[in-house]
Image (cartoon, rainbow, N blue to C red; front, side):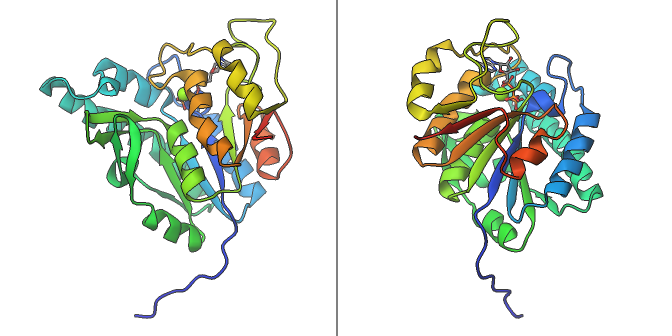
Length: 271
Ligand SMILES: Nc1ncnc2c1ncn2[C@@H]1O[C@H](COP(=O)(O)OP(=O)(O)OP(=O)(O)O)[C@@H](O)[C@H]1O
Ligand SMILES: [Mg+2]
């Protein structure tokens, strides 16, 4: 059979849809269906030529992972079913997101992280990215998510969508990262806990590193470290000169604008 050869493919954009956006994070297994449908519309309207979507666990993945201590690695056999349940929760959430995209004729194809990745002590160690890059070349929109994955030292681990975003950005040399969350961007402190927190519109990697101690893990239901975990994960991508935008994806139009290259929320660059 003739092999389809692809020539020049533009650098992809990575869009993370936070679990804080597509689900109601403090309510178990609660979907934010309206946000998912609106975001599919914005992604359709933006019509970017090369896009990878990653979504978080929200109230689907995090609570199950926490219940079975999947993030702590294999300790006893009672966790085994918990691994399956954590992954199952993620596939349920993923199905809603993928269905909404396909309903708008966006050619999204799910890529299951636990089938292409092995971590070592929680860090991506082996990743078979060729199906993903091939799908990208063909014009598909790969969609991945934070997942329970096999781990070569700890049995299994939780791979955050944030780590996945950062690693994909480095390995695929992407154009930029857009992180959709439920707040207007990165603040000097958690805006939900500290009303005097100030929104940072433009910061450099160096400033970000200094700010690290002010960023809280906060979210009790997030097994991957909330905003602090996110920032720590993004640092390697920033070092690699991939710019990051953190935007409020609960506000209509923001993801569309960010996909179109407008600066909304927080813009972070190596500087
Ligand atoms: N300095 C800060 N600036 C902005 N948000 C912060 C800060 N510190 C803590 N937060 C909190 O981080 C939260 C976003 O991170 P969180 O991990 O909960 O969401 P998410 O990554 O979208 O979800 P998921 O991990 O399920 O994908 C915000 O809701 C906010 O309350
Ligand atoms: Mg998170």
